[in-house]
Length: 212
Image (cartoon, rainbow, N blue to C red; front, side):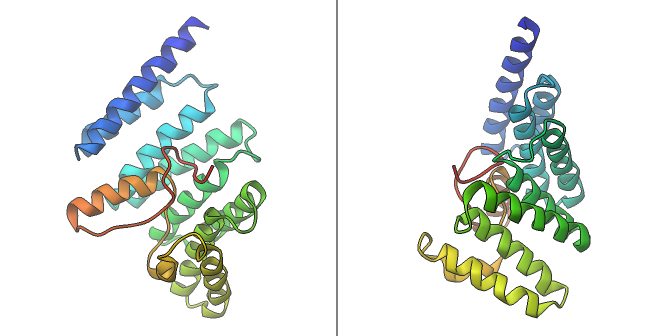
C-alpha cells in the first residue's frame, strides 16, 4: 500500500510538472515528464494512467504526429478496457481521440469504428443531446465527407449543429474543423496558437474525458 501511495504521489508530481512545461511551450520536456508519470502510476490506478496517456497523445496531436498520438490513445483505451471500463465516463472521449488520430493517419475504417463506439458510449453516458455527442457526430461526419460519403455526412452535421446551437454561439462553425476532446484540445490549441495563431474549441476540462 505504501509503495502504491508513493508511486501515485510521484506520478502526480510529474504530471503537474509536465503541465507547467506544456504551459511554457516546452513540449519536449512536458512529454518526458508525462511519460515518467505514466511509468510511476500504479497499475491499478486507471484514472491516472488514462490521464497520462491522454496528455501524451495530446502533445503528439499538437505536433501533428498523429501516429504517435494514435499509439498513446490506444494505450489509454487498453487501460480502460482491461479495467472493465465499458461504462466509464472517459470511454467516449478516449475513443473519439483515437478515432481522430486514426482518421488523420488515413485509416478511415478504424476511425469510423472508433467514432461509432464513441458515439454509443457518449449517448449512454451523457444523453443524446450532450456536446460530447455533437463532437463525435461532427468528427464522424467530416470523415464521411472526406471519403466522399456526403449523403451519410449531412444528417450527422445537422444533428451536431442542432445539439450545439443552444449551448454554443459559434455552433454555426461546428463543421469547420475536427473536434478534439479534453487534453487533446488543450494541447492542440497551445501548439497551433504558438505556430499559427489559430484557435480550436472544445469543452474545457482538465482530463481526457469531457463534459461532467
